[in-house]
Amino acid sequence: METSKKQSSSIKNWSVDDRPREKMQTKGALALSNSELLAILINNGSKEKSALELAKDILALGKNNLNELGKLSLKDFQQIKGIGEAKAISIAAALELGRRRHSSEFLEKTSIKNSSEIANYLKVILKDYTHEVFGVVFLNRANKIINFQIISTGGLTGTVADPRVILKKAIEVEATSMVLSHNHPSGNLKPSRADEELTEKIKHAAAYLDIKVVDHIIVSEEGYYSFADEGLL
Image (cartoon, rainbow, N blue to C red):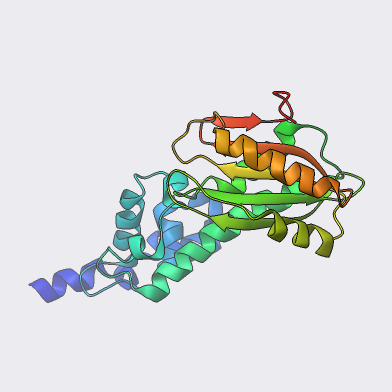
């Protein structure tokens, strides 16, 4: 009885119209649910569950929210029985491609005109980090993004960025200006005294190389904070 139950739950035994791959071929990707798309990535189920059932377990782990799903690590995915390292990597890779697709659309813009534009770009890149990270957007004379670099990672409450590392990278990519950035996983957008002191330190060091710090932007799920807009630069 148990064997027949396992066989009936296998996607191979489903109607062709209900199989995720075949459904995508005949009806297109938009016709598939999130769990069906994940099932295609998972490829094969386990002895106990089909790929679709595992996909539903993964979505549940992310509270059935794709934004929350993007914050999960490889180890988080592997908590689910039937999801090994290979399947976890496939899922994480697909989520990363989604992030890069959104950020690449922004990179195609000719130039950055205001803080909200750069903040939207940074929120896509940094929103899924559950710990604080410090990054720098490097710009050319036309205010076009030529490079983005994560400089350092920290804990839940802070991180430290080395001005020497930042300036070395700025010279390598021939940047004429840059936007400092970091995330606040807590959601609080108010800069700390340490944030203000670090900004001033990098600003003065960069000035010796004729590189301008045009902004320091803090992002969280609540929004963003611009040092330039608040008159702190």
